[in-house]
Image 1 (cartoon, helix red, strand yellow):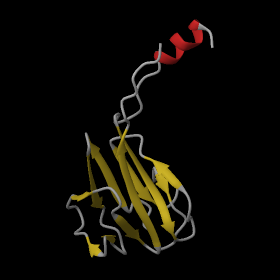
Image 2 (image 1 turned 30 degrees about the vertical axis):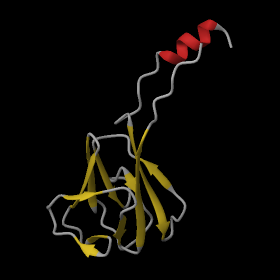
Image 3 (image 1 turned 90 degrees about the horizontal axis):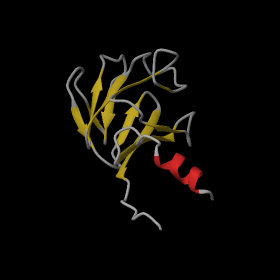
Length: 127
């Protein structure tokens, strides 16, 4: 690889929330296997075009819940959805932030998601 290409790579901005990385993985439901990388502070989960993470499930509201990232902390807020939001089997109160952690299971409608959270490891530069 030429020195120019190496220099170009070094100039890319860090990904959102670096060194943390957050992923919502659909583990059960119509969209099983789909993964959404969280790329903004506020991510609306719901059905249709109004959601940042759009899930094909008629039991999910258009703007069902909100995943909020603040540094290494994620919170989930039910936005007054018709069928509610559950984290690890416990129903959230609408409008109240609930901290979610790595491997927490989120149920909205008939869909189950899992939050995957981690951080990038520092890699020493190669010379």
